[in-house]
Length: 463
Image 1: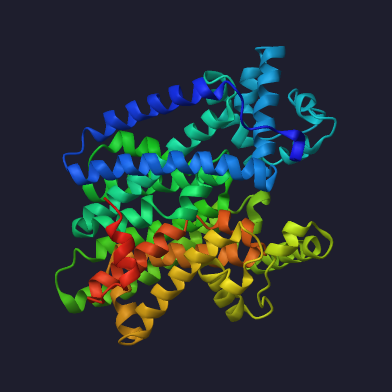
Image 2: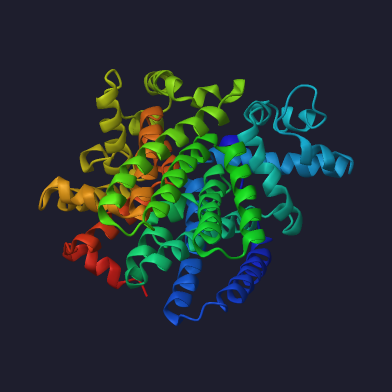
């Protein structure tokens, strides 16, 4: 196991129940403000689902994966605790340090924590170092229990998911089960947003940021609290995974412009402004993207550098596939990256519809393959009945569905093109999965297309 990390301890028999009870109390106090009994029940069921995901994730990570990134983050938390035990004056250094380098007084605690400098090398990037810094507080409260740290991270992700549900439920109150499935109960999203990972934080931040925008610009209430969450969530995304922040920024810009356009009453004038709105929104999104990536460290995210960056990353994955471990070789996939159009199409296909059943080469791929097959069937059924034109016109008429479509597709291109391992991709793609599912299910409803029988059975399980 990487770094010989053990995630379970005898103390968990006491600490984990205490942690769960505290979180249940928090959820109950917050859910009490919801007057809809069915929605309130969804929140609690989502909480129970996520607890199962945390325990499942921890068991699989320790006994199947044998560690992974989460081991490095957990070791980083332990190293920060050691630094604090050595000298309490290290606390402000922890707060203000964006990453580790040779001059940082925290570096010695990471450099040889297990007879190697693996953790130190991993923490030299700000995104990686951010995770143990966030994990330090729950570690201090719950005596370094890995499960309790994961539960705290999970609670933040669940908070973001609930806010995402609330945003779309406001617009589509009759689609409660569909929205709940997309935002609260997708299996792979629940699994990968339940651990000590960057993905858990980012998934929660996406939900908080969208709900903050929605509350300010649409509902026009709770301005101060919403601004706080927008700033906090934007900062987390920008520091941990900048590309998520940039794609979300583009999607939100188009969404807000489209919502404004819907206020125009005259149909002809609205159609004219719709086209203008889309052009202006795309241009604004592009300018914002270029502005936020103007610094030297973020130039890799500029649009004219994305394809070359993606290709170099894929070459690195290819090298690991040819000379790496059996796990990497089992989960490696290829796409045609030489042609920009094929790169886009294949990247979207890899993100949402792969691995195909015949590409399953490990137990870890089974869940992703089942979910991908469901996405594929829903997509084919949606776009192949009654023609493509009607489906796309429905998407572009509704600002929320358009937002889901833009965010999901652009995000899918980014992660699908730059990743060549199904295991890694299943984790990277979780922010866009709820939006793609929302786009599919809401388009089904708006066009009057009946759900497949298997999907009706799945929706029937959501109470």
